[in-house]
Image 1 (cartoon, rainbow, N blue to C red):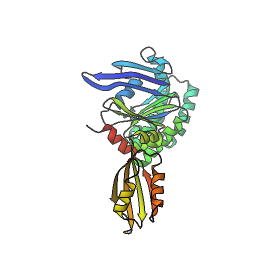
Image 2: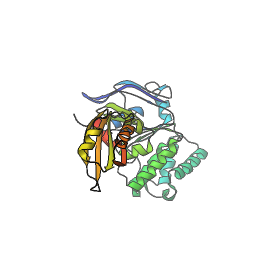
Image 3: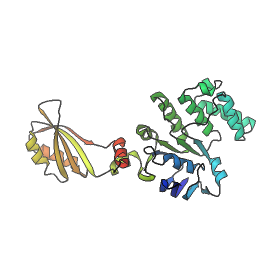
Image 4: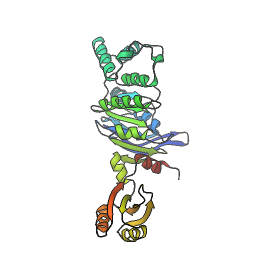
Length: 312
């Protein structure tokens, strides 16, 4: 559906987006993550045709953005971070105005406004001035605007920025609903939201893509270091350290606090995960120790994000 090749954008001598390649399939919800200034908004603006790339190619549904910009814009619904709403207009009048700009005939216009008021839960505010709405409700109106022509591609720039947890959940549910039929790219700095709403996560830093994949794939490929926590009874630290330290791949064993003074808790650091838990279990089983805990510690998306985007 969307193909990006060597996409680059300069502002003077500053490179905001640096030769990125990206392909998004139809029906996929892709989250674009990155710290402030990473190039997320610039990338989205180029995808919508709002900004012209310095170099590189963008193709959407086999249309080239340089040659078929008007046709591509008909395929896209775009919600920028600050929704471009007229605050002195009533919600219904605003959506009616957008429908007229989009050249919907009267019958289709009325039908579409009713559909969007249901989808975005706007029925109770249709006759309220936009300027009196909370930010969360304004975002819903902005989503209805972006969806007016029932676009195949939906591009959302920080759609949950500044919202409270309830509003975030509401916007996330709407995005998931649209994502059943649409191709969606959204930028966010809220990692939990990306993990909850997106099929795929692309992390961008200093204009370059530094990671791309599902949450689980990113966690598995972040690095090869494995952390396993175990809790033992009837064991002493030095004996456990010597015994478990002989296992292949183990390079560090640390004692950590335990809720029970008779319990020994260990943090085992190793390279590789293949069969390590089984080898630890078998080694402990050969002793008189009792194992009460054995778990693999996985990296959070937040930790992976920090590692990939930290200053060197």
